[in-house]
Amino acid sequence: MISRRALLAGAAGATLLPSTIRAAPNRPTVTTSLGRFRGSSEGGLHVFRGIRYGVAPRFQAPHVPRASRETIEAVAFGPSAPQRSERYRPQSEDCLFLNIWTPDARQGAKRPVMVYIHGGAYSNGSVVDPLNDGRHLAARGEVVVVTLNHRLNAFGYLYLARLDPRFPDSGNAGQLDQILALKWIRANVGRFGGDPDRIMLFGQSGGGAKIATMMGMPAARGLFHGAATMSGQQVTASGPLNATARAKAFLDALKATPGDLLDMPWQRLLDGLAAVDAVLGGGVYFGPVLDMKWLTRHPFWPDANPQSNSIPMILGNTKDETRGFFGPDHPKVVGLNWNNIAERLAPELRIDIHPEWVVSQYRARFPELNPEQLFFRATTAGRSWRGQVEEADARARSGAPTWVYQLDFQSPVEPWRGAPHTLDIPLVFGTLDAEGSIAGTGPASRRVSGSMMDAFVSFARSGDPNHRGIAAWPVHSLANRETMIFDEPPHVMNDPRRWERELFARVPYVQPGT
Image (tube, rainbow, N blue to C red; front, side, top):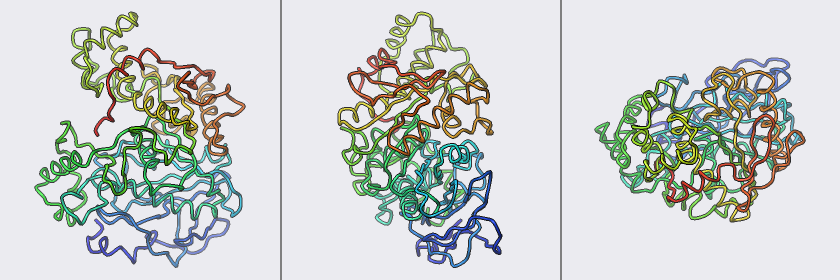
Protein backbone atom coordinates (compact mmCIF):
# COMPACT_ATOMS: atom_id res chain seq x y z
CA MET A 1 0.00 0.00 0.00
CA ILE A 2 1.14 3.58 -0.68
CA SER A 3 1.19 5.24 2.72
CA ARG A 4 -1.45 7.81 3.55
CA ARG A 5 1.23 10.32 4.45
CA ALA A 6 3.03 9.94 1.12
CA LEU A 7 -0.16 10.15 -0.87
CA LEU A 8 -1.69 13.11 0.90
CA ALA A 9 1.59 14.97 0.88
CA GLY A 10 1.66 14.64 -2.87
CA ALA A 11 4.28 11.94 -3.18
CA ALA A 12 6.78 14.66 -4.01
CA GLY A 13 9.69 12.30 -3.92
CA ALA A 14 8.16 9.57 -6.08
CA THR A 15 10.49 8.19 -8.71
CA LEU A 16 9.29 7.13 -12.12
CA LEU A 17 10.24 3.48 -11.83
CA PRO A 18 11.88 1.54 -9.02
CA SER A 19 15.16 0.81 -10.77
CA THR A 20 17.72 2.26 -13.17
CA ILE A 21 20.60 0.58 -14.97
CA ARG A 22 23.66 1.65 -16.90
CA ALA A 23 23.38 2.90 -20.47
CA ALA A 24 22.94 0.23 -23.13
CA PRO A 25 23.85 0.68 -26.80
CA ASN A 26 21.36 0.61 -29.69
CA ARG A 27 18.32 1.11 -27.53
CA PRO A 28 15.93 4.03 -27.97
CA THR A 29 16.14 6.70 -25.31
CA VAL A 30 13.77 9.65 -25.07
CA THR A 31 13.86 12.66 -22.78
CA THR A 32 10.42 13.74 -21.57
CA SER A 33 8.98 16.26 -19.16
CA LEU A 34 9.25 13.62 -16.41
CA GLY A 35 12.69 12.30 -17.15
CA ARG A 36 14.70 10.22 -19.57
CA PHE A 37 13.33 6.79 -20.57
CA ARG A 38 15.16 3.93 -22.22
CA GLY A 39 12.98 1.46 -24.13
CA SER A 40 13.69 -1.51 -26.34
CA SER A 41 13.88 -2.30 -30.05
CA GLU A 42 11.42 -5.04 -31.00
CA GLY A 43 10.60 -6.18 -34.51
CA GLY A 44 11.49 -2.88 -36.11
CA LEU A 45 9.63 -0.82 -33.51
CA HIS A 46 10.73 1.23 -30.54
CA VAL A 47 8.77 0.11 -27.49
CA PHE A 48 8.50 1.79 -24.09
CA ARG A 49 6.62 0.06 -21.29
CA GLY A 50 5.82 1.27 -17.80
CA ILE A 51 6.25 5.04 -18.18
CA ARG A 52 4.79 6.73 -15.13
CA TYR A 53 2.49 9.63 -15.99
CA GLY A 54 1.06 10.44 -12.55
CA VAL A 55 0.71 9.76 -8.86
CA ALA A 56 -2.72 8.98 -7.44
CA PRO A 57 -3.45 9.89 -3.80
CA ARG A 58 -6.30 7.73 -2.57
CA PHE A 59 -9.69 9.20 -3.58
CA GLN A 60 -8.01 12.40 -4.78
CA ALA A 61 -7.29 13.84 -8.21
CA PRO A 62 -3.96 12.58 -9.59
CA HIS A 63 -1.00 14.86 -9.97
CA VAL A 64 2.25 15.08 -11.91
CA PRO A 65 5.20 13.39 -10.15
CA ARG A 66 8.63 14.88 -9.73
CA ALA A 67 10.84 14.32 -12.78
CA SER A 68 13.58 11.75 -12.40
CA ARG A 69 17.23 12.72 -12.72
CA GLU A 70 18.15 9.19 -13.69
CA THR A 71 17.62 7.34 -16.95
CA ILE A 72 14.69 5.05 -16.33
CA GLU A 73 14.33 1.57 -17.79
CA ALA A 74 10.99 1.43 -19.65
CA VAL A 75 10.96 -2.27 -20.54
CA ALA A 76 8.28 -3.76 -18.28
CA PHE A 77 4.60 -2.99 -17.81
CA GLY A 78 3.61 -1.13 -14.69
CA PRO A 79 1.17 -2.79 -12.29
CA SER A 80 -2.52 -3.07 -13.00
CA ALA A 81 -5.14 -1.28 -10.91
CA PRO A 82 -6.47 -3.16 -7.86
CA GLN A 83 -9.46 -5.31 -8.76
CA ARG A 84 -11.13 -8.52 -7.69
CA SER A 85 -10.09 -10.33 -10.85
CA GLU A 86 -7.01 -12.51 -10.46
CA ARG A 87 -6.27 -12.26 -14.17
CA TYR A 88 -3.93 -9.29 -14.05
CA ARG A 89 -0.93 -9.40 -11.72
CA PRO A 90 0.80 -7.59 -10.13
CA GLN A 91 -1.73 -5.06 -8.86
CA SER A 92 -1.09 -1.82 -7.00
CA GLU A 93 -2.72 1.50 -6.22
CA ASP A 94 0.41 2.94 -7.81
CA CYS A 95 -0.83 2.08 -11.29
CA LEU A 96 -0.63 5.26 -13.40
CA PHE A 97 1.67 3.98 -16.15
CA LEU A 98 1.47 4.03 -19.93
CA ASN A 99 3.11 2.14 -22.79
CA ILE A 100 4.20 3.25 -26.27
CA TRP A 101 4.85 1.43 -29.55
CA THR A 102 6.32 3.62 -32.28
CA PRO A 103 8.00 2.95 -35.64
CA ASP A 104 10.69 5.45 -34.70
CA ALA A 105 11.11 7.45 -31.49
CA ARG A 106 12.25 10.51 -33.36
CA GLN A 107 11.19 14.11 -32.92
CA GLY A 108 9.45 15.52 -35.96
CA ALA A 109 8.08 12.30 -37.48
CA LYS A 110 4.51 13.57 -36.87
CA ARG A 111 2.77 10.20 -36.98
CA PRO A 112 -0.88 9.87 -35.92
CA VAL A 113 -1.29 8.82 -32.29
CA MET A 114 -3.77 6.11 -31.24
CA VAL A 115 -4.48 5.98 -27.49
CA TYR A 116 -6.32 2.90 -26.20
CA ILE A 117 -8.54 2.95 -23.10
CA HIS A 118 -9.16 -0.58 -21.81
CA GLY A 119 -12.50 -2.19 -21.01
CA GLY A 120 -13.77 -4.19 -18.07
CA ALA A 121 -16.55 -1.73 -17.24
CA TYR A 122 -15.20 0.69 -14.61
CA SER A 123 -14.13 -2.01 -12.19
CA ASN A 124 -11.80 -4.44 -13.97
CA GLY A 125 -9.32 -4.77 -16.81
CA SER A 126 -5.80 -3.78 -17.77
CA VAL A 127 -3.77 -2.98 -20.86
CA VAL A 128 -1.26 -5.68 -19.94
CA ASP A 129 -3.74 -8.05 -21.63
CA PRO A 130 -1.95 -9.51 -24.69
CA LEU A 131 -4.98 -8.63 -26.84
CA ASN A 132 -4.04 -4.95 -26.32
CA ASP A 133 -0.47 -5.26 -27.61
CA GLY A 134 0.20 -2.32 -29.92
CA ARG A 135 2.95 -3.74 -32.13
CA HIS A 136 0.86 -4.93 -35.09
CA LEU A 137 -1.15 -1.73 -35.27
CA ALA A 138 1.92 0.51 -34.98
CA ALA A 139 3.79 -1.44 -37.68
CA ARG A 140 0.95 -1.81 -40.15
CA GLY A 141 -0.36 1.72 -39.80
CA GLU A 142 2.88 3.66 -39.26
CA VAL A 143 1.27 5.15 -36.16
CA VAL A 144 2.21 5.65 -32.52
CA VAL A 145 0.12 3.43 -30.23
CA VAL A 146 -0.28 4.28 -26.55
CA THR A 147 -2.05 2.19 -23.89
CA LEU A 148 -2.57 3.17 -20.26
CA ASN A 149 -3.79 1.94 -16.91
CA HIS A 150 -5.79 4.03 -14.46
CA ARG A 151 -7.71 3.62 -11.20
CA LEU A 152 -10.81 1.43 -11.21
CA ASN A 153 -13.82 0.49 -9.03
CA ALA A 154 -13.79 2.14 -5.58
CA PHE A 155 -10.32 3.59 -6.09
CA GLY A 156 -11.44 5.45 -9.19
CA TYR A 157 -15.19 5.99 -8.80
CA LEU A 158 -16.32 5.75 -5.14
CA TYR A 159 -18.23 9.02 -4.67
CA LEU A 160 -17.46 10.33 -1.19
CA ALA A 161 -17.83 14.06 -1.82
CA ARG A 162 -21.24 14.40 -0.14
CA LEU A 163 -20.08 12.35 2.84
CA ASP A 164 -16.68 13.94 3.46
CA PRO A 165 -15.53 17.30 2.01
CA ARG A 166 -11.94 16.04 1.85
CA PHE A 167 -12.78 14.01 -1.26
CA PRO A 168 -14.30 16.39 -3.85
CA ASP A 169 -12.79 14.48 -6.79
CA SER A 170 -13.48 10.92 -5.66
CA GLY A 171 -16.38 10.05 -7.96
CA ASN A 172 -14.41 10.78 -11.15
CA ALA A 173 -10.83 10.08 -10.07
CA GLY A 174 -10.45 7.35 -12.68
CA GLN A 175 -11.51 9.77 -15.40
CA LEU A 176 -9.05 12.35 -14.11
CA ASP A 177 -6.26 9.77 -14.36
CA GLN A 178 -7.00 9.35 -18.06
CA ILE A 179 -7.10 13.12 -18.57
CA LEU A 180 -3.72 13.48 -16.86
CA ALA A 181 -2.34 10.78 -19.15
CA LEU A 182 -3.65 12.65 -22.19
CA LYS A 183 -1.96 15.82 -20.99
CA TRP A 184 1.32 13.91 -20.72
CA ILE A 185 0.80 12.45 -24.19
CA ARG A 186 0.07 15.84 -25.73
CA ALA A 187 3.18 17.32 -24.13
CA ASN A 188 5.56 14.45 -24.91
CA VAL A 189 4.37 12.23 -27.76
CA GLY A 190 6.16 14.38 -30.34
CA ARG A 191 9.45 13.11 -28.91
CA PHE A 192 8.31 9.56 -29.68
CA GLY A 193 7.53 10.38 -33.31
CA GLY A 194 3.88 11.26 -32.77
CA ASP A 195 1.81 14.25 -33.77
CA PRO A 196 0.25 15.97 -30.72
CA ASP A 197 -2.33 17.51 -33.06
CA ARG A 198 -3.57 14.10 -34.24
CA ILE A 199 -4.47 12.15 -31.12
CA MET A 200 -7.25 9.59 -31.50
CA LEU A 201 -8.83 7.73 -28.58
CA PHE A 202 -10.21 4.24 -29.04
CA GLY A 203 -11.60 1.90 -26.44
CA GLN A 204 -13.71 -1.22 -26.07
CA SER A 205 -16.67 -1.73 -23.72
CA GLY A 206 -15.89 0.23 -20.53
CA GLY A 207 -13.07 1.91 -22.43
CA GLY A 208 -15.55 3.25 -24.95
CA ALA A 209 -17.80 4.43 -22.13
CA LYS A 210 -14.88 6.27 -20.53
CA ILE A 211 -14.17 7.98 -23.85
CA ALA A 212 -17.83 8.97 -24.29
CA THR A 213 -17.68 10.46 -20.79
CA MET A 214 -14.50 12.43 -21.52
CA MET A 215 -16.15 13.91 -24.58
CA GLY A 216 -18.38 15.78 -22.14
CA MET A 217 -15.79 16.71 -19.49
CA PRO A 218 -14.50 20.28 -19.75
CA ALA A 219 -11.12 19.18 -18.36
CA ALA A 220 -10.62 16.96 -21.43
CA ARG A 221 -11.31 19.70 -23.95
CA GLY A 222 -8.67 19.88 -26.67
CA LEU A 223 -6.77 16.77 -25.54
CA PHE A 224 -7.85 14.53 -28.43
CA HIS A 225 -9.03 14.96 -32.00
CA GLY A 226 -10.95 11.77 -32.79
CA ALA A 227 -12.70 9.00 -30.87
CA ALA A 228 -13.78 5.44 -31.59
CA THR A 229 -15.90 3.43 -29.18
CA MET A 230 -16.23 -0.33 -29.57
CA SER A 231 -19.27 -1.77 -27.78
CA GLY A 232 -19.05 0.93 -25.15
CA GLN A 233 -21.33 3.91 -24.58
CA GLN A 234 -22.11 6.32 -21.75
CA VAL A 235 -25.39 8.11 -22.42
CA THR A 236 -26.07 9.10 -18.81
CA ALA A 237 -23.85 9.14 -15.74
CA SER A 238 -24.63 8.16 -12.18
CA GLY A 239 -26.49 10.86 -10.28
CA PRO A 240 -24.87 12.12 -7.06
CA LEU A 241 -27.68 10.82 -4.83
CA ASN A 242 -27.50 7.30 -6.23
CA ALA A 243 -23.70 7.44 -6.11
CA THR A 244 -23.85 8.50 -2.45
CA ALA A 245 -26.23 5.65 -1.63
CA ARG A 246 -23.77 3.24 -3.24
CA ALA A 247 -20.90 4.75 -1.27
CA LYS A 248 -22.86 4.20 1.96
CA ALA A 249 -23.47 0.57 1.03
CA PHE A 250 -19.75 0.16 0.34
CA LEU A 251 -18.84 1.75 3.69
CA ASP A 252 -21.41 -0.35 5.55
CA ALA A 253 -19.94 -3.52 4.07
CA LEU A 254 -16.55 -2.52 5.47
CA LYS A 255 -18.01 -1.09 8.70
CA ALA A 256 -15.98 2.04 8.01
CA THR A 257 -16.19 5.80 7.68
CA PRO A 258 -14.68 7.65 4.70
CA GLY A 259 -11.72 8.62 6.89
CA ASP A 260 -11.13 5.00 7.88
CA LEU A 261 -10.56 4.12 4.23
CA LEU A 262 -7.40 6.20 4.01
CA ASP A 263 -5.27 3.86 6.11
CA MET A 264 -6.98 0.62 5.12
CA PRO A 265 -4.86 -1.81 3.06
CA TRP A 266 -5.98 -1.74 -0.54
CA GLN A 267 -6.69 -5.46 -0.47
CA ARG A 268 -9.23 -4.82 2.30
CA LEU A 269 -10.94 -2.15 0.22
CA LEU A 270 -11.59 -4.75 -2.45
CA ASP A 271 -13.73 -6.64 0.08
CA GLY A 272 -16.16 -3.75 -0.05
CA LEU A 273 -16.87 -4.51 -3.71
CA ALA A 274 -19.01 -7.41 -2.50
CA ALA A 275 -21.54 -4.92 -1.12
CA VAL A 276 -25.06 -4.98 -2.56
CA ASP A 277 -25.90 -2.05 -4.81
CA ALA A 278 -28.25 0.23 -2.88
CA VAL A 279 -30.08 1.27 -6.05
CA LEU A 280 -30.34 -1.80 -8.27
CA GLY A 281 -29.31 -4.75 -6.14
CA GLY A 282 -26.50 -7.03 -7.25
CA GLY A 283 -22.90 -5.85 -7.17
CA VAL A 284 -22.17 -2.18 -6.60
CA TYR A 285 -22.08 -0.15 -9.81
CA PHE A 286 -19.06 2.11 -10.25
CA GLY A 287 -18.89 4.71 -12.98
CA PRO A 288 -18.63 8.44 -13.64
CA VAL A 289 -20.70 10.71 -11.43
CA LEU A 290 -22.59 13.88 -12.26
CA ASP A 291 -20.69 15.70 -9.52
CA MET A 292 -21.15 19.23 -11.00
CA LYS A 293 -17.40 19.79 -10.67
CA TRP A 294 -15.73 17.57 -13.25
CA LEU A 295 -18.87 16.28 -14.95
CA THR A 296 -21.56 18.94 -15.14
CA ARG A 297 -24.05 17.29 -17.52
CA HIS A 298 -24.76 13.83 -18.84
CA PRO A 299 -22.48 12.83 -21.73
CA PHE A 300 -25.22 12.21 -24.32
CA TRP A 301 -28.40 13.48 -22.69
CA PRO A 302 -30.44 15.47 -23.52
CA ASP A 303 -28.26 15.71 -26.62
CA ALA A 304 -24.71 15.16 -27.78
CA ASN A 305 -22.52 17.48 -25.75
CA PRO A 306 -21.70 20.50 -27.97
CA GLN A 307 -18.17 20.48 -26.54
CA SER A 308 -17.25 17.51 -28.73
CA ASN A 309 -19.54 17.75 -31.74
CA SER A 310 -16.64 18.90 -33.90
CA ILE A 311 -14.66 15.76 -33.00
CA PRO A 312 -15.15 12.93 -35.52
CA MET A 313 -16.31 9.69 -33.97
CA ILE A 314 -16.70 6.01 -34.81
CA LEU A 315 -19.40 4.07 -32.95
CA GLY A 316 -19.37 0.27 -33.19
CA ASN A 317 -21.00 -2.81 -31.75
CA THR A 318 -20.94 -6.53 -32.46
CA LYS A 319 -23.91 -8.44 -33.83
CA ASP A 320 -24.06 -10.92 -30.94
CA GLU A 321 -22.85 -8.85 -27.99
CA THR A 322 -24.40 -10.82 -25.16
CA ARG A 323 -23.00 -14.15 -26.35
CA GLY A 324 -19.83 -12.79 -24.80
CA PHE A 325 -21.49 -12.59 -21.37
CA PHE A 326 -23.27 -15.93 -21.09
CA GLY A 327 -21.44 -19.16 -21.76
CA PRO A 328 -23.25 -22.41 -22.69
CA ASP A 329 -23.17 -23.52 -19.04
CA HIS A 330 -24.59 -20.26 -17.67
CA PRO A 331 -27.79 -20.71 -15.60
CA LYS A 332 -29.56 -18.26 -17.90
CA VAL A 333 -28.87 -20.54 -20.87
CA VAL A 334 -29.07 -24.06 -19.46
CA GLY A 335 -32.64 -25.36 -19.77
CA LEU A 336 -33.88 -22.24 -21.56
CA ASN A 337 -37.30 -22.86 -23.14
CA TRP A 338 -40.47 -21.06 -24.17
CA ASN A 339 -41.93 -21.45 -20.68
CA ASN A 340 -39.10 -19.67 -18.82
CA ILE A 341 -37.61 -17.36 -21.42
CA ALA A 342 -39.62 -14.26 -20.44
CA GLU A 343 -38.60 -14.60 -16.79
CA ARG A 344 -34.93 -15.05 -17.69
CA LEU A 345 -35.00 -12.32 -20.32
CA ALA A 346 -36.55 -9.58 -18.18
CA PRO A 347 -33.58 -8.62 -15.95
CA GLU A 348 -31.10 -8.91 -18.81
CA LEU A 349 -32.84 -6.29 -20.94
CA ARG A 350 -31.95 -3.65 -18.31
CA ILE A 351 -35.04 -1.60 -19.23
CA ASP A 352 -38.60 -1.67 -17.89
CA ILE A 353 -40.41 -3.38 -20.74
CA HIS A 354 -43.01 -6.17 -20.80
CA PRO A 355 -40.89 -9.31 -21.32
CA GLU A 356 -43.71 -11.59 -22.48
CA TRP A 357 -44.66 -8.99 -25.06
CA VAL A 358 -41.04 -8.80 -26.27
CA VAL A 359 -40.94 -12.58 -26.66
CA SER A 360 -44.23 -12.65 -28.56
CA GLN A 361 -43.08 -9.88 -30.90
CA TYR A 362 -39.81 -11.66 -31.68
CA ARG A 363 -41.55 -15.00 -32.23
CA ALA A 364 -43.99 -13.41 -34.66
CA ARG A 365 -41.27 -11.57 -36.55
CA PHE A 366 -38.65 -14.35 -36.50
CA PRO A 367 -40.51 -17.68 -36.22
CA GLU A 368 -37.35 -19.60 -37.08
CA LEU A 369 -35.60 -18.59 -33.81
CA ASN A 370 -35.30 -21.11 -30.99
CA PRO A 371 -35.40 -19.87 -27.34
CA GLU A 372 -31.62 -19.52 -27.06
CA GLN A 373 -31.34 -17.55 -30.31
CA LEU A 374 -34.21 -15.27 -29.30
CA PHE A 375 -32.66 -14.68 -25.86
CA PHE A 376 -29.33 -13.55 -27.29
CA ARG A 377 -30.84 -11.50 -30.09
CA ALA A 378 -33.21 -9.62 -27.78
CA THR A 379 -30.66 -8.99 -25.02
CA THR A 380 -28.12 -7.74 -27.55
CA ALA A 381 -30.59 -5.30 -29.13
CA GLY A 382 -32.26 -4.16 -25.91
CA ARG A 383 -29.29 -4.10 -23.55
CA SER A 384 -25.99 -3.72 -25.37
CA TRP A 385 -26.81 -1.97 -28.63
CA ARG A 386 -29.34 0.60 -27.44
CA GLY A 387 -26.77 3.04 -26.09
CA GLN A 388 -25.00 3.19 -29.43
CA VAL A 389 -28.28 4.00 -31.17
CA GLU A 390 -28.87 6.85 -28.72
CA GLU A 391 -25.38 8.30 -29.21
CA ALA A 392 -25.32 7.94 -32.99
CA ASP A 393 -28.73 9.54 -33.38
CA ALA A 394 -27.84 12.37 -30.99
CA ARG A 395 -24.74 13.17 -33.00
CA ALA A 396 -26.64 12.94 -36.28
CA ARG A 397 -29.16 15.45 -34.99
CA SER A 398 -26.28 17.77 -34.13
CA GLY A 399 -24.59 17.33 -37.50
CA ALA A 400 -21.51 15.82 -35.83
CA PRO A 401 -19.30 13.65 -38.12
CA THR A 402 -20.04 10.06 -37.09
CA TRP A 403 -19.47 6.65 -38.65
CA VAL A 404 -21.24 3.53 -37.38
CA TYR A 405 -20.16 -0.10 -37.74
CA GLN A 406 -21.53 -3.51 -36.82
CA LEU A 407 -19.19 -6.49 -36.57
CA ASP A 408 -20.91 -9.53 -38.11
CA PHE A 409 -17.83 -11.70 -38.66
CA GLN A 410 -18.32 -14.89 -36.70
CA SER A 411 -15.63 -16.37 -34.51
CA PRO A 412 -14.14 -19.40 -36.27
CA VAL A 413 -12.74 -20.57 -32.92
CA GLU A 414 -16.03 -20.56 -30.99
CA PRO A 415 -18.63 -20.38 -33.77
CA TRP A 416 -21.58 -20.81 -31.40
CA ARG A 417 -20.78 -17.34 -30.06
CA GLY A 418 -21.21 -15.68 -33.45
CA ALA A 419 -19.78 -12.16 -33.20
CA PRO A 420 -19.66 -11.62 -29.42
CA HIS A 421 -18.61 -8.78 -27.15
CA THR A 422 -14.79 -8.26 -27.26
CA LEU A 423 -14.30 -9.93 -30.67
CA ASP A 424 -13.37 -6.60 -32.24
CA ILE A 425 -10.37 -6.11 -29.90
CA PRO A 426 -8.00 -8.61 -31.59
CA LEU A 427 -9.36 -7.63 -35.01
CA VAL A 428 -8.54 -3.94 -34.50
CA PHE A 429 -5.19 -4.60 -32.79
CA GLY A 430 -4.21 -7.40 -35.17
CA THR A 431 -3.52 -9.67 -32.18
CA LEU A 432 -5.28 -12.61 -33.78
CA ASP A 433 -2.97 -15.23 -32.26
CA ALA A 434 -2.74 -13.65 -28.80
CA GLU A 435 -3.79 -15.52 -25.68
CA GLY A 436 -7.54 -15.10 -25.23
CA SER A 437 -8.33 -14.33 -28.87
CA ILE A 438 -11.20 -16.19 -30.51
CA ALA A 439 -10.85 -14.27 -33.79
CA GLY A 440 -8.96 -17.04 -35.57
CA THR A 441 -5.83 -16.72 -37.70
CA GLY A 442 -7.06 -17.95 -41.08
CA PRO A 443 -7.27 -15.91 -44.30
CA ALA A 444 -10.80 -14.61 -43.58
CA SER A 445 -9.80 -13.49 -40.08
CA ARG A 446 -6.77 -11.69 -41.47
CA ARG A 447 -8.82 -9.94 -44.13
CA VAL A 448 -11.45 -8.69 -41.71
CA SER A 449 -8.76 -7.63 -39.26
CA GLY A 450 -6.90 -5.78 -42.01
CA SER A 451 -10.07 -3.92 -43.01
CA MET A 452 -10.74 -2.85 -39.43
CA MET A 453 -7.12 -1.92 -38.67
CA ASP A 454 -6.89 0.17 -41.82
CA ALA A 455 -10.20 1.90 -41.07
CA PHE A 456 -9.04 2.88 -37.58
CA VAL A 457 -5.63 3.99 -38.86
CA SER A 458 -7.22 6.05 -41.63
CA PHE A 459 -9.48 7.64 -39.05
CA ALA A 460 -6.50 8.48 -36.84
CA ARG A 461 -4.65 9.94 -39.80
CA SER A 462 -7.42 12.01 -41.40
CA GLY A 463 -10.55 11.91 -39.25
CA ASP A 464 -12.27 9.68 -41.83
CA PRO A 465 -12.26 5.84 -41.68
CA ASN A 466 -12.61 5.32 -45.43
CA HIS A 467 -9.77 3.52 -47.21
CA ARG A 468 -9.28 1.59 -50.43
CA GLY A 469 -9.85 -1.79 -48.82
CA ILE A 470 -13.55 -1.26 -48.06
CA ALA A 471 -16.65 0.00 -49.81
CA ALA A 472 -17.46 3.69 -49.34
CA TRP A 473 -18.49 4.23 -45.71
CA PRO A 474 -20.96 7.13 -45.46
CA VAL A 475 -21.46 9.37 -42.46
CA HIS A 476 -24.33 8.25 -40.24
CA SER A 477 -27.60 10.06 -40.90
CA LEU A 478 -31.06 9.82 -39.36
CA ALA A 479 -32.56 9.35 -42.81
CA ASN A 480 -30.61 6.18 -43.65
CA ARG A 481 -28.63 5.11 -40.54
CA GLU A 482 -25.73 3.99 -42.72
CA THR A 483 -23.76 1.18 -41.08
CA MET A 484 -20.54 -0.52 -42.15
CA ILE A 485 -20.90 -4.29 -41.70
CA PHE A 486 -17.47 -5.74 -41.02
CA ASP A 487 -17.66 -9.24 -42.47
CA GLU A 488 -16.54 -11.06 -45.59
CA PRO A 489 -16.60 -8.76 -47.50
CA PRO A 490 -17.16 -5.46 -45.64
CA HIS A 491 -20.28 -3.75 -46.93
CA VAL A 492 -22.68 -0.95 -46.00
CA MET A 493 -26.29 -1.49 -44.94
CA ASN A 494 -28.90 1.11 -44.08
CA ASP A 495 -30.55 0.66 -40.67
CA PRO A 496 -29.63 -3.06 -40.46
CA ARG A 497 -31.71 -3.78 -37.34
CA ARG A 498 -34.55 -1.37 -37.94
CA TRP A 499 -37.30 -3.60 -36.56
CA GLU A 500 -35.46 -4.21 -33.29
CA ARG A 501 -34.46 -0.56 -33.00
CA GLU A 502 -38.08 0.55 -33.35
CA LEU A 503 -39.34 -2.12 -30.95
CA PHE A 504 -37.10 -1.00 -28.08
CA ALA A 505 -37.50 2.70 -28.91
CA ARG A 506 -40.98 2.44 -27.32
CA VAL A 507 -39.27 2.56 -23.90
CA PRO A 508 -37.08 5.45 -22.63
CA TYR A 509 -33.40 4.60 -22.36
CA VAL A 510 -31.33 5.15 -19.23
CA GLN A 511 -27.74 3.93 -19.06
CA PRO A 512 -27.64 0.64 -17.12
CA GLY A 513 -26.38 1.27 -13.61
CA THR A 514 -26.92 5.02 -13.58
